[in-house]
Length: 228
Image (cartoon, rainbow, N blue to C red):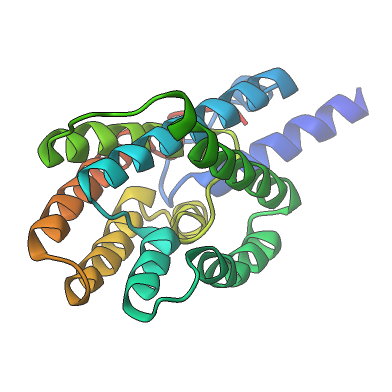
């Protein structure tokens, strides 16, 4: 009995950290709802796959993305440095930040998701290809796919690193919507691309970023979703 009480109090404390100041108290009966290993595996795979498909759509339409991946692309185009090396180095401080502030489980799941996303990006072009994709459709559909994938990962205590880690931390600790933070960071990164790519591609990329972040802004609300 004492063990069950301690587990319930720990779960309530974790949920309280996700809610902004002034949020309604979460009933203790909801605090015991937790995801199982199979649910986590399914969500992490689906989320990584959705994000991978979105990035393939962006690549086909010549769009850019935000977060550390977008920054790595900008530096790659501007300097000729290896994208993989730049992306790896940029993410190192974020993994350290996640380990300290969001926990070991979150950080390890994030590593797994990054590996799965990399695998999707390598294998997907070998099994299907897109002959034509208008940038407007890629921006809207890709943005929704990206937002859905990121939401899956966030609800199962994971991410794809970079700015998403900062966004989730801001929501958990300060009650600032993750979508707001992600939107601000991603728009800054995409706008930096004006220095190296045509403005038309940047404009479509900004639309894709706005679609993704508005989706997260509306859908990822503290206290609404009680699974852990």
